[in-house]
Length: 232
Image 1 (cartoon, helix red, strand yellow):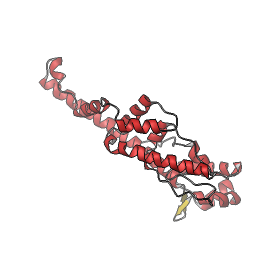
Image 2 (cartoon, one colour):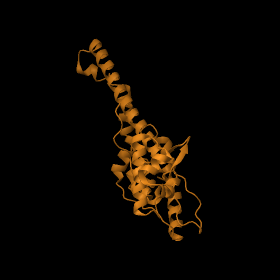
Image 3 (spheres, helix red, strand yellow):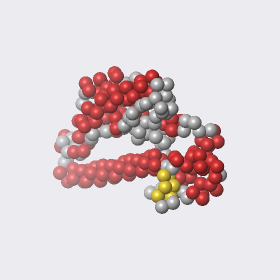
Image 4 (spheres, one colour):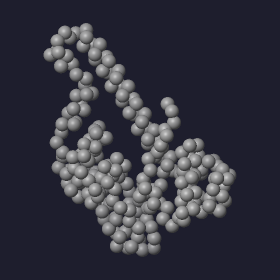
């Protein structure tokens, strides 16, 4: 399997996580992120060689070290998530191909008419059809109506059920409660004059599993509070 040529990048999260960085520091930070993407990790000596000792000292806190190997945890997680997703898609395609091939061979042996073949559909495909035909649950509609960002009901629902078709029943009850927490959290940030990220497009919110994010306590002393676990 060839190396993935890209990784997901979230502009709002990146800007929120680099507030206070100069343009030079942001450029150095991005350079090391790209180096990590291509090499998995880097040594402190390599970081100094690439961006200079002075810049490294200013952005070093964005990386963690294991046995002298430095890496950005968020980027490592994003790379791993994309790798796992690609692998799951590959296995799914292989599974469907093998199942379809097996089904076709079986039907050739026992079927001579279209009417008979029609009753021999693949079990997994039937499950997908049943899921795709369910109506939009009221809990999702309540969550959708509450969401403050850009959204499109039909598009967002189609995306949600396609991406999480095997988890729909367990996820839907979590959407509205966590969204209400985020609304309260962001309102508090604005009240205190702290940086508050813009609302993501709902499709992005769903794809990032934002119902799982945690919100730290907000107080007067902090200039900026980062959202977890979506800090770059």
